[in-house]
Figure 1: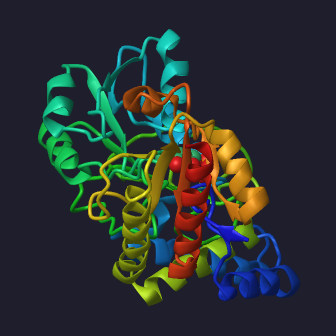
Figure 2: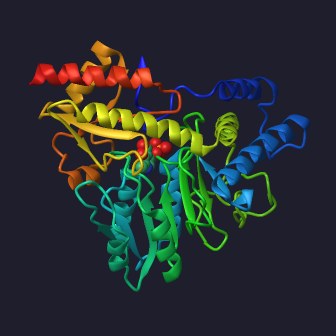
Figure 3: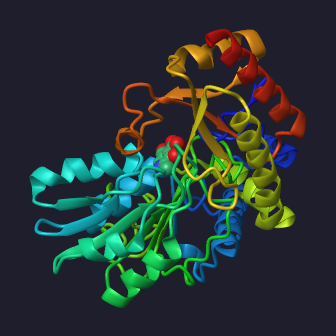
Length: 381
Ligand SMILES: Cc1ncc(COP(=O)(O)O)c(C=O)c1O
């Protein structure tokens, strides 16, 4: 199988992820932060190591400001719902994933208003439009770092500078960039960074995280056992315990730590270079096939390793099915949980076939995908 669905979740993972998760399960799978015995302490140290590695990746000073969640969606919900109050206004973009758009829609009846700034037909966001959308009561700007439909990179550094200038908290959905693209929360003025552990960070599914700036008072979504201040019925006030009630996904977090360690050893520049090369090959190859329409910037410098396309007016689901069944190529079709983005691109009806590359894809994989699309296009024409 040629796996080109890395935007959904990366596959396979580096060998060290499998090895350490297995070791954790067998050798030190105790409950961290609760008991004081050797195995519990070892599990606690392993979790802390993951926090430290994520801090190095994102230039975060305090590992305790990283909160583990089960995916980017949970991180986004925690940040958005924990921060906003009735009467607040939010600025976001028209390219957001439902993990941003739906929590915001759910807050609308509670008196929280959202402005969806329109991106252009390539899905690009102009920071000047973000500036124009800001109101007196704007309490959050939240944008995706890169679209999961077109791969288009958003100008987060400019928007971060604008948010800092106006004193508005800035949240970034790094679902498509964490582990692949340099993220520096200080340089980008990011107050809330939501990331999945299972995509570019190469950890297992069921992992994710949220960096919360010490300046913000984000309400927790749950209360319960944390292993700390147990005499007190009030939830601990400090991160990460404030947000991490209940037994954590120790084995998953250990796997995420190994994925992050792998990325740190390799360097995001090398990861990005590899993925940009494969993305360029896809764009060039598809660009030469008559009847194939590519969406987004069509430039590997302006996008991550995500390429969305259609073949004439062929059904995207059917074509993705043919790629799977006849060519053994895994892609994703449809709306990719981002109807707003498809409205922006004009593909709400047809959806798109999404090819998303990962660190373990090869040039041969891409050549096979281009050849397959060429053959399918010839059939349809
Ligand atoms: C841009 C974007 N945001 C959020 C998410 C949600 O991520 P998760 O599946 O980890 O909840 C995704 C998943 O594909 C995504 O692409």
